[in-house]
Image 1: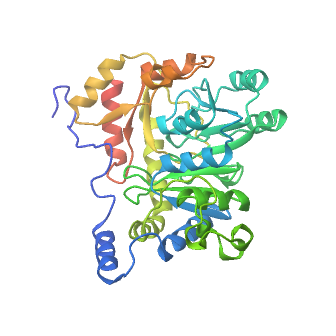
Image 2 (image 1 turned 30 degrees about the vertical axis):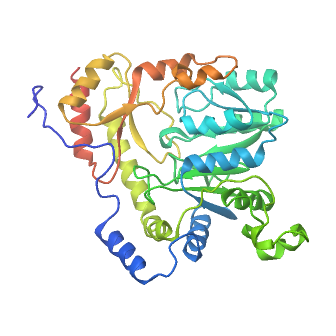
Image 3 (image 1 turned 90 degrees about the vertical axis):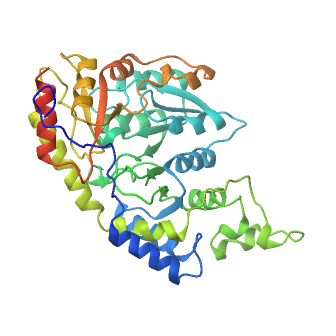
Length: 385
């Protein structure tokens, strides 16, 4: 028992065995029997399976969700024009970093209902900054899309791109998030809904963009394109096996990791259902006078349980979790304006709600080891403050 009289828990941010014994055996067997471990046929199978699950035409498997964002921004940005991209002031550092490298960044304040862009602030930015792209982050598995947001994008001619790294399987308008914009990114980091240890996916229905992403993934090489499209780009004085059509990176992933991805994908829907059950228990049990529980949860695919303090002491809530041996983190990066790397960005500052989240919101992990009973113990402890 803890000093407060509550059962002490072992509640880590991430499960220790997201990769099961059967997964490990399958990986070992692949290493023992395969003549190729790097990107090859299994990566293609994983990309196809992911496209079918998500509901998109094309998927490109890369080495992280951060690299997925990097390739999307580079593929869509003209570094000479320095077009403006907008995203939330509360998101992850490598969501905004590629924009800082290849375009102009403008952060938008968030809505405290689901961490989406505050629509009044967003329209002001659309009017005054005239951005070309909105990189919309679905934070903590909440759906950041709405009909008014899509109407604003249409009204001002802003192209939608989705960061779904924390929102696998979340839905809006009868479709999964990641299928509503020109492109989308997903992360398969160890603590996410499914894992390939490290890894990420880029998804799109646009064939031309798909071809750009294939080149960017692998050094900008001609031979990364589908065979039937190569002849139109070949040049006489360069060997086609090493012809570089554009600048590029090396952010490929491997067949080894794709083996794991195919196995994890088969369990993803059950994982999402488990996480959402824990989240329902969380909002049912937490005291709404002390903590914010009225998030817009329609279509949610919960990534983590947000503890947003209203009329309780934030430091006391953190101390309570330490007593119970519950690992926690800030609400992702909190307010990005507070971080040193943002000092290099010249932009208008919109962060009233992001600052409130920065000061009052944290989260605990939600994964297969977390049970509704554990969630009830957490809520009882927090409610006692």
